[in-house]
Amino acid sequence: MAEKNFITSGRNTIIHKIKKFDLLIINGENPVVIVSHRGIGIYKGEIPAKRSIAKKAYQDIVQIESGDVFSEEKTLLFVQALDGREYKIDYSKVDTPNFIKVHQENYI
Image 1 (cartoon, one colour):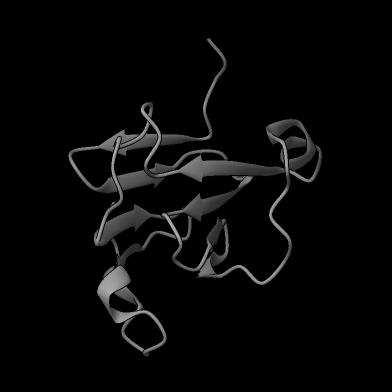
Image 2 (image 1 turned 90 degrees about the vertical axis):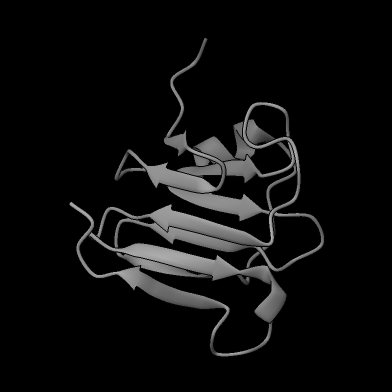
């Protein structure tokens, strides 16, 4: 089995592991979120068609509803990023300033 660039924890937490790769979090039809070693934001680029293309661009696609992640779409998702913060992504508040918020300043 290949090494993943993230770990899932509990029912709705993703932990970013490897600084070299950015995570593209896809949760149904909601906006795609990018997690890098510098922080988190809404991804505005084109989503790679295959994982191999994403890997060449130093990205990893995280399909939330896939069986190896959470097996269902999530309304609330927590992401522990490499910048030392834990972010809360609330998909019920898309297109508002509260869509992505800092949940904990220092989770370590």
